[in-house]
Image (cartoon, rainbow, N blue to C red; front, side, top):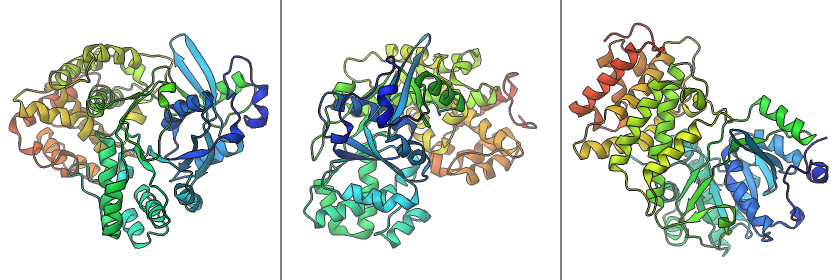
Length: 487
């Protein structure tokens, strides 16, 4: 028996499920990037809105790269199980907010059609840093990217989020349909501004009049999202199936903590996401910076050192003093220059993070967090580093965190068969292999301007701290660095 609409009444009484009439839900949100995080976060809060009786906010979930989510969830009528876990407790809930699932290249025309539909009021995004096609260092649109070039050459058959959004807005403008709101839910600083910059840059390459209309009419609110969501494992699936008494092809396991802070700026209305715990605020940048620098910066640091010390999960990494001591110093450096939101004690926030990181019920893999470092380092670590450098403050913990990423890259480069999951992998691996001398390795990797810009490689004080951190990690008995690194 499979999880689906007709089998909802067969679920155990302990499993929460949609009590609203899903057949009456109006699809008003198209979400691009319907992965695990969206289904643990925005879809859950939207489900709370539907449960309140406001059925006007169903989600069309679209996977742009593959059909994997569609293949799993379409036979289940878009239903899936959310498992919220803490140490010693859990809650299972079937989420019904996603009323249609699309996926893969074959469905892109349908995705575009849903975005053009007058009933669509919000297009939301969880596409990671890579999906915006902006250079991490300069912030400029990557016009030479093959996918962008393809969409500019054939704008009527778009495949990127930028091409889809601009083409859908072009259709709406031509047919007198009000523009939808573009709501970024990605871990990016000023993510709404980032989405706006990328969309406008793409639109200007096609049609300056359309770009001017988008600039004047379309809203791109910023948001801050937070929920630790590990990748689903086969063990998770087997456990959920046993609890349900039926098959769920793609459940989600996450922590109990969830946070969503949103700028209240929408063109065609929006759901009352406060029913699911969201906060509408005008201090989005402060919330974003606190989360990106305290949580995500620490997560990346932990992930690279976890990979170098054989720690498979975040909770396992938090058992190692080498890592926890570094994180404590890192957080101290971050908080010294952090501007927290009004009414928020950042030290309390950090203490809460420690508890979340130590949650043994979550099997959040360090390998998953370590992906795409070139896209993450600028926001998570380098932004704080630059603020401290401008203030004349030393940053040994931040330098050691960056050194951890460098060791991770070098080890990958010298491990036969190892793959660096990063859009700049070829550049990174080439520089990581170019020398075995510590100073040269640092110079080579700092020379990747797409990650580090042009300023850090010329800062002698920072480079000295980076070299010291790199050498300390290389000499540490618990760090399995690449062999033959010369001091």
